[in-house]
Length: 405
Image (cartoon, rainbow, N blue to C red; front, side, top):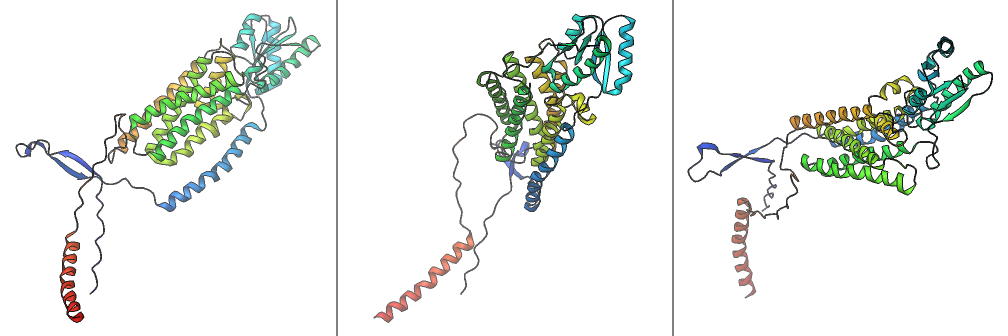
C-alpha cells in the first residue's frame, strides 16, 4: 500500500487588518478582518540578471565616451574678458578685439581698475586688461585652463597696444596644497557618492524599511558624507584652509538632497534608478562642473547643464566659499532647492503609486518585540494515515508473536 503524498505547506499572502466596524458583536469592538493584499510584481530573474550585466557594459561605454567628448579638447566659447577704461579708444579697442576673436570670447568694458579686480575675484569675468599700466588681472583658482585662455587673448591685445608683453597679476593664485585647484571637485564627488550609496544600500538590503527611518538614516550618513571629506581636505592634507564649516554644511546638504532624489527614484522604479542617477550626477555632472575644465571651454551640451545639475552647483559653490568669499552663491542654493523639490516629488509619487503592501521592517526607533511562536496544527489527512498505519501494524505484530512460539 503506497503512502499518500504529503500535503504541501500553505503560504498565506500578506494580510492587512481592517476594523469590523459597527456590525461587530457586542463586546468585540477590537475584532479585525484579515484581507489579503496582492503582492507587488517583480521582474523575472532572467530580466534582473540581464539588466545587471548591462550595467557595467553601459558604464564601460558611457564613461569614456562622455568624459572624452567633454574634456579632451577644451576650446573657449563666449568666455568673458574685459578691458579697463572709459574713453572712446577703449570702446574701439574692445570692438576691434571682439571682431577678431568672434564667438570664442565676449569682450566687455569696465570703467576702472577696482571694478575690474572685483569682477575677476567675484568670477564675473575671467580676466581684465588695463591699457594704462599694461596689466592683466586673472584668478588661477577660478580655473587654470580658463586663466590660460584669457591671458593668451589679452596678451595679444597688450602687444597691439603697448608693443610689449603685459604684467600678469594673479588675484587668486593656487596655494601649495592645491596647485591645480581640484580639491573642491574631489570632496564634492565623495559627498555625492555618500548620499547615492546610502540610498542604494538601504533599498537593496532593507527594502521593507519605513520611509521615516530611511530619511533619518540618510540624514545621519549625509552629515558624515560632509564631515569626513571636509576633515581630509582641511586637516589631513591642508589642501583647503578657509570656511570649513560652510564647506561641511554644503557637502552634507547636497549629499542629503541627492540621496533623497535617488531614494525616491528607487522607491518608484526599483534598482533601475541606479543608472539614471549615475548618468545625471557623475557622467553628465562632472564634465559640466567646471572642476577640471571651465564650463565655457567644454561642448555646448555640457555648458548648458552647468547651471542645471547639482554636481556643478556643488563644486562651484565650494570654490566660492573657499577661494572667492566675495562671490555670491545664490545660484548654488537655488539649484539645491530645486533638486530638493524634485526629490520630495519623487518620494511623494512613490508613496502614491506603491503604498505599503506589507508590515514594514522598521517604522520607528522603538524596541523590536520578541517573536511570538504560533501553534502548529497537523493536517487531518496526516493524522488519519498515521492512525490507519498503527491499526494495521497490530495484527502483524500478533502473527509474529505466534510464529515465535
